[in-house]
Every structure is written in C-alpha cells, then in structure tokens.
Length: 152
Image 1 (spheres, rainbow, N blue to C red):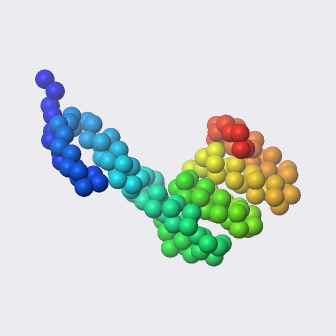
Image 2 (tube, one colour):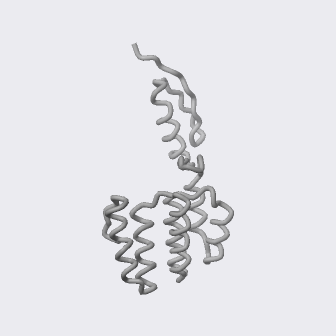
Image 3 (spheres, rainbow, N blue to C red):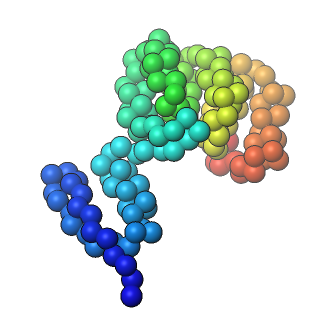
C-alpha cells in the first residue's frame, strides 16, 4: 500500500485539497510556488524570488533603475535575473554594464545559461571586442556544455 499524506493549499483564492505521497510533496510545493507566481529558485545563496525581481527589472526605465535593483537584491541573483538585467542594460545602450553584471555574477558562482552567454557575446560584439566574443562562444560550449541558440 502507498502511504499518502494530506495537504491543503490555497491558490488564487481556490482551496486545493490533495491526497499525495510524501515523496511528491517537494515537487508539488515547487509547482504551487511557480503557479502562484513566486518562482522560488534554490541557489547557493538560498531561496530567492527571482520572478519578482525579473518583473521589476523589466519595468526599469533607465540604467540607474537596473543598477539600484541589482544593488538592493544582490543576494537574489540567478541566471534569469542576470539575463533580464543584461538585456535592459543593452537596451539602454550600456553594453559595458551588461558585461559587468555577467562577470560579477560569474565570479560569485552564479551558473550562467545560453541567454546570459548570448547577451554577453552581443555586448562584446557591440563594443567591437570580436575575439573576446568568439572566446565566450567557445567557452560556453567547451567549458560549460551550453549549446548556442539561434540568437547566439
């Protein structure tokens, strides 16, 4: 027989009463967090609410807003946040700041993804640092095993 536990969740004002195996509880809590818009991500720094920070970054009106958000939330940084910040800096014509975020977060051990590498490569290209851009492309593939996408 399968041991079942009972949990009750509230999601968007609707109560959910579920019978669930204890081994599935962690997965369910992760899914409920994502469905509730919390997008809790576990990193070395602990749990962070990256989706909220990404949304605030998307609303930034200038590079100074991006810098302030990153400074206030430096512990809540993961690859999704890095990508959003780099994208905003690029849109505001600040490729050097985008690269600074990329390098600083790499130095702190934040695992990068295809989007952050693509943004860094684009920033280096905009600064006419062609060899460095190609070097990042090679590092992305050989060192990290990240395959380029259509944007890269």
